[in-house]
Length: 264
Image (cartoon, rainbow, N blue to C red; front, top):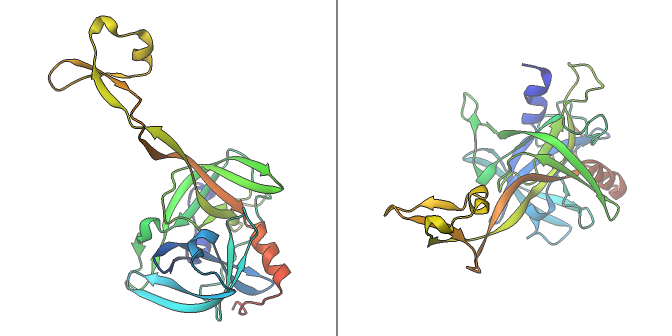
C-alpha cells in the first residue's frame, strides 16, 4: 500500500460530525497563524442567519457538545463557512491548507465525513469516532465567474457536506503530511424520467431498442419496452462530487481579523 492509499490520523482526528437544528453534516479544523478554526459547508448552517450561533459537535454517537461560534461566510456561490470556536475543539496534528497546489488531475484524492449523520469506526473506549473515508479521482477544475470549482469522480451522499478533500502532494516526500485541497459541497445530480412498460411484439423491436437496453421479458413471458412520457422525474447521483478550494476559507479567516483559539 502506498502513502496515497490511506488517510492518516492528521486528517481523521480533525473531522467531526456537526449538526444545526435538523441539519447534519461534516466539519473539520484547520490552523491559520497558530489558531484553530472550524470549516464546513455554508448550507449545513443555513438556519443560522446572524454573525453568531450555536452548533453541536459530536465526539461519538452519544457524546456531543453545543458551543457558540462566530460565523464567517464566503460570498456566493462559494459554499464554505468558517466557524470560530471559543476553544480548541480537535487535535492540532499538521494539516496544511494549501489548496490544490501540488495536485494534478487524475490523481487519487479522499474525502471524509458522516453520511446520513452516521458513525463508522469507534475507538476502543467507545468515546470517539472517525468519519467514513471515500476515495475519488481529481477529475477537473472549472473557473466560473471568477470562482474555482473542483470536481471529483466518486460517490458522495448527504452528510458528507462540509468534509475535507485531502491528498498527497506528489512534489513532496512520501512522508509528508496530507494536505487539504477543498471542502465538499455536494454532488452533481441529474433528472431521469420515470419509465413505464409497454408490451411489444418481437417483430416491432428495433436494433436501437436493443442497443439502448429498453427491452425486457415481463413476468407473463411476453416482451416489454421501456417508454417515456410519464411526466414524472427522479433525481439521481451522477457520481460527480463538487467541492470548493480551501483557499477561500483561509482568505476569509485572514480578511476577517477574528482570531480563533490558540492551537496547542
